[in-house]
Length: 423
Image 1: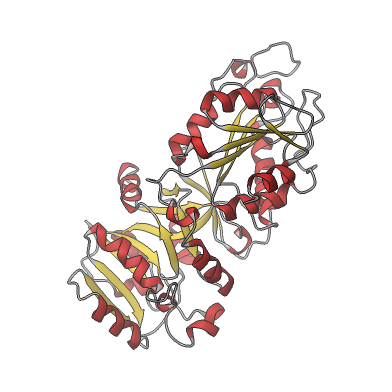
Image 2 (image 1 turned 60 degrees about the vertical axis):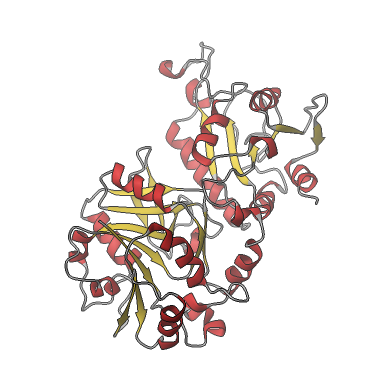
């Protein structure tokens, strides 16, 4: 059994200039629609019972919802004393042990396929599932690290003492089995993410992260509210649902984002080409997915470990976020077909379907993100990048010294992005 919960009881101290004492969920996004309207328009389609847990002082909010949504599936629960987003859940009906609660924070704007998240939760037989995504501000977000089975293996509570951490942030949408609510102490102030999720994680329950590129925006600051209002008319929001195809700008790494010595060894990914990091934010704002597709045969050759490669990608995503950008995903191939390297890893010596000029990474990206290849671009500095994009039906732009007949060439990534997004 599934029930829905929207948490709207927060004070909204960071946006108090706008709220002036009322709920963040009441903030107008368009002339006639508030945040809560956008949320309910999507959630009512699920045809499940909806509980809205609200501050008892938000009388105007209660009146607004009751008047506009005279619907028997919506129940507003007044929270007498605010003790945090976790403690608020103790106001739910007592017979909750056989219920999975889909929890949505009341300051989110989204275009999100909830049914796929529900199926993921059921397939994993999960007791607690978290919607996670990369964003432009991981430094003030609760972040997680997930493995190849989507299981959360590390949890990083904000504020972060260490800046270098995976950019996989909690989106504010969760599924939790009612049996776990017993771990919430109603008499103590408890936050859902900082306290409850962390406690469940520490108790060794399996927690799963549902990674998505879909549009989910936390409107916790005035700047983000302004951005969201602009987003509404863009493909970023309109095509944000995973059911909608969306174009991507695919990027090679070495020679495009960082310098490449072309010596066949592992490249220093921290030696960035000027303007490359700043360009990612422009891709994000225009509504394209920003996806890295890179051959990294140095692992097969034995120059570096896979763990080192992953740490370098984490470093890269953190550096990009410092300029307000993020990568929607990163795909890499660690195989290499030729033998004869001193410390090579034998089981990685093969011509993999993912290794460019093959286009396996393109196909994997499409399977996960539902990409419109006809409107997408690949930016690379190798002929293998061109061949892989050609096989996929993706337009190609070369950077650096590579020139391909019939394709645009630009000096670097900055120039290529400015050219692509000039309209």
